[in-house]
Length: 387
Image (tube, rainbow, N blue to C red):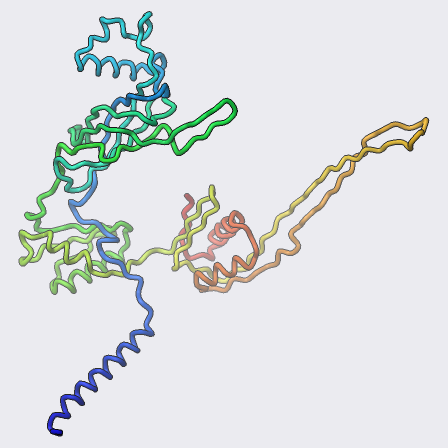
């Protein structure tokens, strides 16, 4: 064996030992809750557009609009027939005459859709159809040709197709309703006729818009982008915007630039916030919520009155007495004596705060009142938003 070759093996052994030590060191470090830039922000020019239109649905089984009550439906139907070559006005089809048009198989609807960014001409998108008149169900109906316009009044898509909606099944003594019957969808029901796009190849700068505006998050995004590009090209202009100057090597190829930076990991920050929904009793608290030292007691006065009438009858074969009803009343008063004062220490974590409040044994609706009272006392370092 040649002893002159033992040094490379010794170096390799030391490198392996070093990598193992580093792996054990980082294994004990908790992972940061980081997110990709594409998940917390959007890029300039990449946005959706809202479309809307007015149309008619036909083929309903007597669940459409009453033409006597929905004048706009009747006028729309007459206008459609005349565009198809049927002279509805002079042929006596107008409702009110002996041969008036009174069918309940037609309904006026509002059609809405979302035009995705950079959707190309000829592709299809889904549309939502909602009844406008007194129609009771759109189940089984067909949407006729409906132009869909944008905010500028231009037609960007045309919708038509079979509607998928809920239904109503009823009998003499019972009925079953599935989902919403006056609103439905047409899968791939609209064809895009006009494109909305931005020529990104000519951009010299790009705005990155945060979905949840925050000063710290905006600066972290700029720092991550600058560290990746190796130059000071990204700067936060406000809590919701980071302006990125396109580097010379990416000029004419902005798509490649955005593809590279959207995968960068950033740890987003957020303000301490408590969101409360009084209708459902839902409470959501962020991890940064902190409470100063405060004492909490919760109790309520409950009075329960139970009436149990009893019938008093005379003895058998008695010649005197009569049957009477004797009232029996049971009154119970709960003053919440078992509810004790609990102390929540200052600077506790979210888990400790939840455990402390749960130890009081209170319902979510009472917990909402307690959180609002803690905030009013100035002991909560967080904002409360009531939905």
